[in-house]
Length: 111
Image: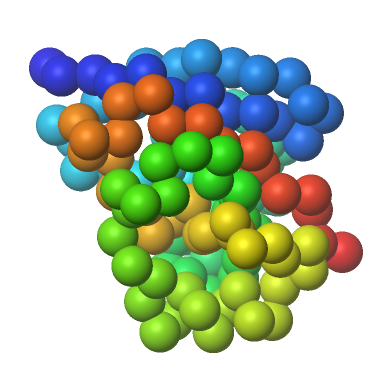
């Protein structure tokens, strides 16, 4: 098993340095959910299909290492609240060894 370290800042501003497996075909949203870093029902509502933007996060480093935004991700971010230039849908970021040291902040809940 090959893990990388990712720092996730939750909605209260607390930083969590977590292990994320690169060999389980997970995405960042699934890592956030597995560590329960956002209340149940506030992240990944659509199940990771890029259809709700509840998993929006801000990439604090490594932006250049991430895959390009898909049309679906761009479209969903156009409809989301609290969008910044570094906003991404965490369900669209696969966990790979190249993201070791990634730092993200979970966006506020859109209500």
